[in-house]
Length: 209
Ligand code: ADP
Image 1 (cartoon, rainbow, N blue to C red):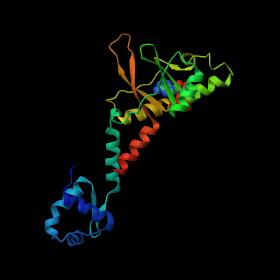
Image 2 (cartoon, rainbow, N blue to C red; image 1 turned 180 degrees about the vertical axis):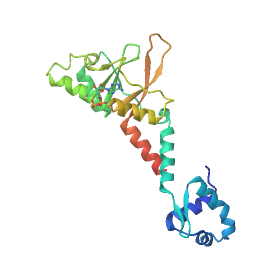
Image 3 (spheres, rainbow, N blue to C red; image 1 turned 90 degrees about the vertical axis):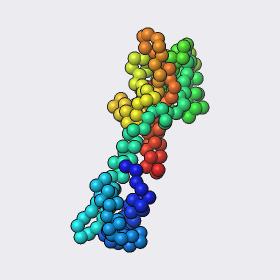
Image 4 (tube, protein in one colour; image 1 turned 45 degrees about the vertical axis):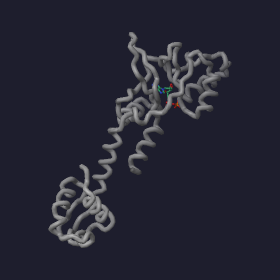
């Protein structure tokens, strides 16, 4: 619901001074109680304010939180995705580790010669491969990566809520944002990434608005 300027003023007063009576609010706005009645009725019905007989109006904290949560869950992946860091699947594990540090990310996406998504390489994948003391220069990332069709992906038109669910349900830190190509069998181009940090940042942005 779009609030009028006066309704916003009323909410501010109740936030600051609630519980407060209708008469006291009217006095603060230099209005009559009667002139204020429709706005108070609207705000109470919409859930912004709560009214208690003989006590006055309270600000409804839950309402604001619900609004913010709703705003958050409706945000689209396309508006929050970050730049994906990709690497050729034939690259060595050593190069992948260097890339991870240079780009300051936790996950790399491996692509094939056509630029199609082939795998995901996380920090733990790289650490695990280094444990065996193998020659990391000679070991291609394609050997250690999580491969298609096991990659959990997200499309740009999906919501941040869907992204958050996919990450939590699959115990992973990031999702490649993909666009399907026209080819068959299905292949995907990586056009972005969503990480747990993306979700946290979006949440902060929305709550601070
Ligand atoms: P870390 O390894 O740093 O804990 P993750 O929790 O993201 O990072 O990765 C855990 C495992 O899940 C790794 O083996 C990784 O290859 C795999 N993985 C990461 N992201 C995805 C994804 N989007 N789809 C499928 N597997 C993934």
